[in-house]
Image 1 (cartoon, rainbow, N blue to C red):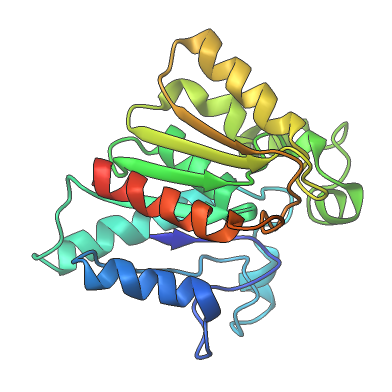
Image 2: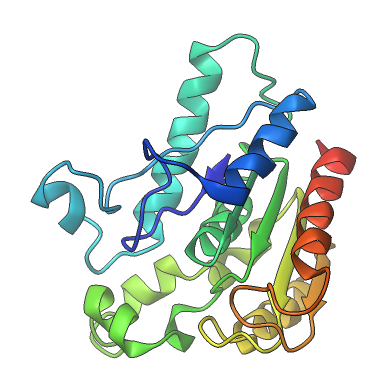
Length: 222
């Protein structure tokens, strides 16, 4: 599963997907089945109720509906292997990957979270407070949407990737998550790209190295 799941964009579009689409086609060429689902709250043309239902609860409903979609596809298509479902995403998709791995360990075996936001209290106000309100006024929503609060649920293989110079989803969130996973005694893998921004594309060879890393992790664990 390739996930984004946030209010800022869709993944299911009738358009050219660029290099990421080519990456998914390369994985499909090796025998993997690639799927993506837009949960409620994403900017799909499905009306105001679809968009506004996630207000105050970013991260909670999206992770539940993504897992429900996987279960539904497994039931519908007998050629899918229910024991080997993987998920990956970037930014908000990285956060949803963490929520998937922590909250639905029975569904996902392997996850790759690129530039995730483990704790919503650390994200910028223009985005987070627009949809979640103030942390003091919506403590429950911030807790439910933040993957770090569910880290004890991790059972599968998890790779976290982040640029230490991330100018959007700051690296401190991943450091907090690393400390929490260490505290819980949870095995995981971490790749840090020094001084790279949220795009993780600065420096010769960086993009190729990153996608080779994701592909290798998928091959080894799925």
